Image (cartoon, rainbow over all chains, first blue to last red; front, side, top):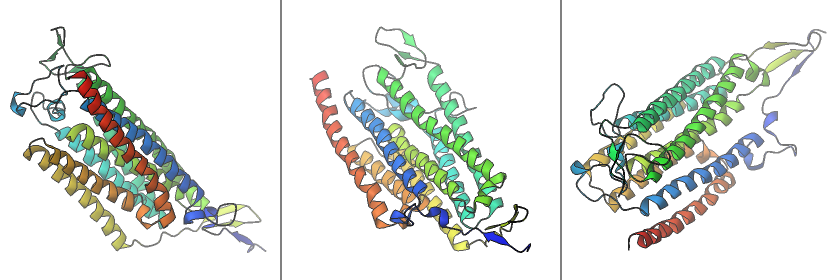
Amino acid sequence: MSNTAIVIEEGAETMWSGGTAPMKASYGKLMMWFFLLSDAFSFSALLIAYGLIRFSHPAYDGALEDFIFSQSYWPVPEMVFEAVPFLHGVHLPLVFVGIMTFILILSSVTMVLAVEAGHRMDRKGVEKWMLWTIVGGFTFLGCQAWEWSHFIHGTDEGGRLLDGSIFFGANLSMNQYGPSNFAALFFFITGFHGFHVFSGVMLNFAIFYQTVTGKLERVGHYEMVEKVGLYWHFVDLVWVFVFTFFYLI
Amino acid sequence: MSIINIETMEETSQVVAQPVDKEKIKKIWKVAAILAIVTLIEFVIAFTLDPSGAKAFLFIALTIVKAFYIVAEFMHLGHERRSLIMSILLPITFIIFLIFILWYQGSAIFDLLYP
């Protein structure tokens, strides 16, 4: 009589109430996809608005060596984002933002490895790779905090405003780098993305916690890892576009 | 799979992790390498070519290459049902529509401000 046992079948959770899974995807995964589609619209609108505002300002057309910050044209991004921590005063264009890009791509890779471990019901593997993903997320956020701080406090020389005074750094109404919209768009676009990274790290931590306590193993599958994984890859995807349109072009 | 004993309602974990499929892991790192290499190429272009329309076009093309690998492989969309792929990709055409409209608007505003 002690042999009586109920065996919970795997895969039953992926069925919708109608007993079938439309598009062969579970309800949660499909809804995550549609949420990401709507989020893609938000980010596209922001980046396209950046393009609209940028192209309604004059572009700098002199030689790159002679570039100085001015309110009369849009700044060249690689002349603005050229600082790296601990290397004060060294001109290293786009190096720091490149490092940030690699960190985010790497944390995306560790997330795929966590999903793969989940498919094999490998709890230790999921724990290890989720933890690396969380570490990568926090590192990226730390880098972004430094970059914002540098952008807000400005360079040693500062830049000349329209009234002739020298201004250091940036806020929402004026900045040393160029037209006021430049800093406003920087804060809004990288800020909105950074907030996505932050909420992604929180979601990853919640799922990491459920893995460590054994909840997901008891549930019988690691689909939650896949769902937060989709969100995390999307955050990486958005950064790829922000990197191109804000920093490279 | 977990087994619940009806008498005691105790749950015993009998989960055994399945062995690692080396091919799968290799493929993940291959995609990661492609993303890293494309990013490096973007860096090289950023410092060797002079600003031009062709340079911007190259950046956008390389960005779409990266986006393809992230969405198709990392997000696994490339291996989903065709109906799911289409229900995500087709709405994206609205974004292309918006790009062209605001591109046109941006140059119109520029012509107004700096005649």
